[in-house]
Length: 390
Image 1 (spheres, rainbow, N blue to C red):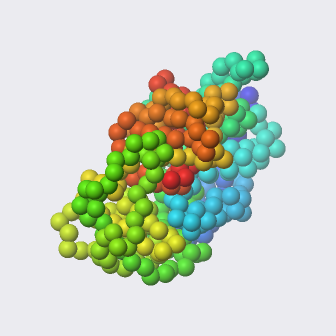
Image 2: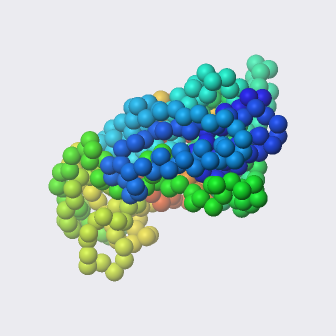
Image 3: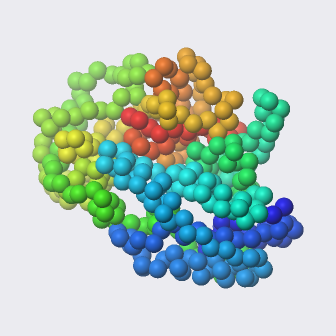
């Protein structure tokens, strides 16, 4: 098979390319430049050039052709602009999920196919297999990676059948230590390279500085909500009530400080608040971009940090295998996570006329609008996902 490997310069994609070459495939590498603006980043201006240099050395060591493609315009339009728009509306997006859906398995996939590739391989820790579909054609399943500490299936939770059709994940069945061992024994230049962190293809950023490229600072109030606020509240009973977030107003608490823009904060955040005089850490428990107020609470176990459920709008429900989609009125039990690396949580999904409701067995910390909820079967198949609307 002729396979294009998205070679990033990291050890995971390097070993993916090596394994495919050793298996006898016709392999070539393509390095994507998706970002070249250092505004707000915490590394050097030429980080992508360093990554490209390592990727070229890896390709040379393995003995495969190396290509370069500039997708930065597509990335800005389809990922970064989406980020800016989401934060401006008070949502917290996940750019890594968008990067895979819109860039790696769309723009990049199309480019790789134009170069004659039959498949595209990446260094994701996840697996794929196929089962008979309802029409007799293959239906592709997305499975968690064998290494539970590195499983990256969550980042691919928005892929379609057409995208999975062309996808290969060569390291999904091995562990990270094994990947490092293979790289060292092969003498790959990326063998001891640290894993990348931060926003996909952008790196670690000072988020407020990064967002200020488009979003203007605006001073607002920080209001602290005390625990006794919740004492008289009626417990949520219906599935719709359990999916509703707490909604506060200024008179519900006490003004504890000022901030430079509610759009720069997210639920669960504890840094950048500059509020003293508390025994325990202070966390953001809610934001109101219209009133430009952020609400905070003291302590890891503050009631405002926890919710029993969430809702996904109909337009944002995505099933990786469409034949598994739930009908209105249907209920199912799944394992769910609302962020990468979160342990899977027992939950019940219920499809109603206005969307999909997820109610957890135990209250969850930091449920955040704009993030993706992804649901798995007990056997580890990622079956669907959606953007948390509230």
